[in-house]
Length: 356
Image (cartoon, rainbow, N blue to C red; front, side):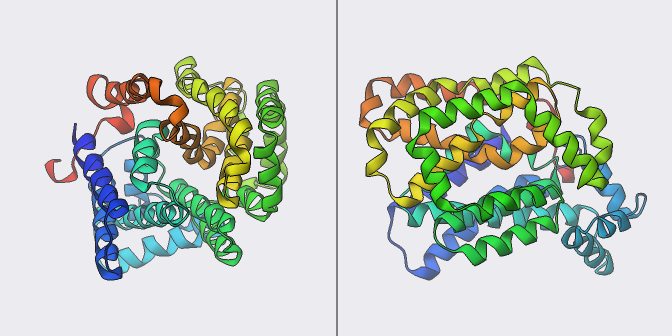
């Protein structure tokens, strides 16, 4: 229930941010309040997810932090070292990482805002559909890298290429998996527009590609050849994810199909930024199918899941879907309510640090 309270505040804050005209200082303060709201829960979590105590042990020295320096994850390493030198408790690590993640989320949403999107709607769908704000409480390093990537690719689509590349490098310093994602920041934007312009062919092609299991073979090669620190994960490649995990991603395919039809009729009305964003969604739209073969694909899926809100966003803002919007809203909201109220487990079952 606490998730509903805080994330509703976040949506309301962004609604004001979108609707009202503020001075630069007022807009900054409002966005800062949004950062505070969404950073609060992950900052003061206790035992949420599977890695909370692992990170606490790393901070307290029970497990070595030097490993992260050797892996090149310098940003995470120095955050731990500096917080230790300040004499702060282990919980400070969660606070700092959560604030950083929240700033990256806010900046990503602001890129959407300057390109004509409603940030409150993007954020609402991010909460309801992606699970990112919950999963980040389990994968601290991974999700800073994920948010760096999201902002990097959005900056690229907005014409700020150097900033996008700098954010990509920052992401690498938190998690080595970001190395593989830099490729997508370097790909010319014309490629992404080509994907969105030919959405039927590429959506189908990527769907079949992930369904075939070929990406698992490619990932196995990369783990052994270029990502030695993560080669131990190769043992997990042949461990498929649960049926429920896969089905929960396929649940949104009806929106994909509607959006493909809509896009075929409306592509030439899109801005370059929107065509790029949609093209990137096409590229990552079927990554979840790799979970059929390996639960390890979940780590890849994290980098693409933010953009899964795009078809649903366009559905709710299209007049062509007016007759279905209330039904579709219930369709989107219901699974989230089940996760946070009816059957809260893992990252959806919140425990407050001060009460433990």
